[in-house]
Length: 198
Image (cartoon, rainbow, N blue to C red; front, side, top):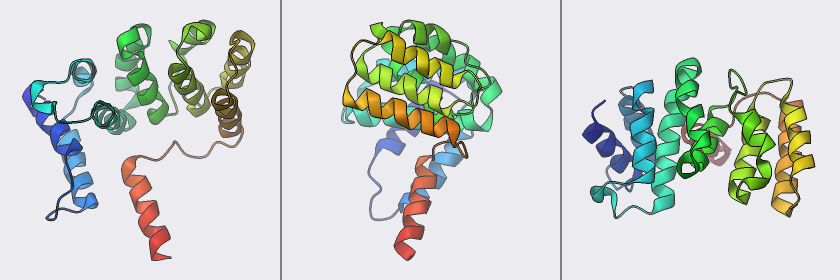
């Protein structure tokens, strides 16, 4: 997909729903547009996260990052084997690490924990937010060594905030009671509609 098309897609996704379009219409449009995103576009998406274009200046930085993460997650869930190797190298780049962790957590069921092991060994050097997302990635993996990675994180980190403790407990629970990857925005919205319908 061309860079300008990617930027237009992201801006559209970050924009308000509006009176003429429902949330489901917006998600349907997003899914059709995301079909055009290819594994080769991962680099452009990560660069847009680090350096938003001028036409996206009205979008809050957290919203911009969320839209990019959701776009990569939706694309990568369709073809983990092609996308994950494109995402993992960003774990070693401090300016892209947080987004890479968020995306890998959302993708779930990683084909391997390659790239994660070195972060686990260097967990003490991560920010608290990065550490929480690392715990999420490990918790969402489907590997036998996931629990030992959580044990290692517990051994290495000297700062034990309540959030990290809760994250570790939730990740252990997720590993032991594995069912489905975490829901996408579309799946959450459908769940809310079903709950509301009663």
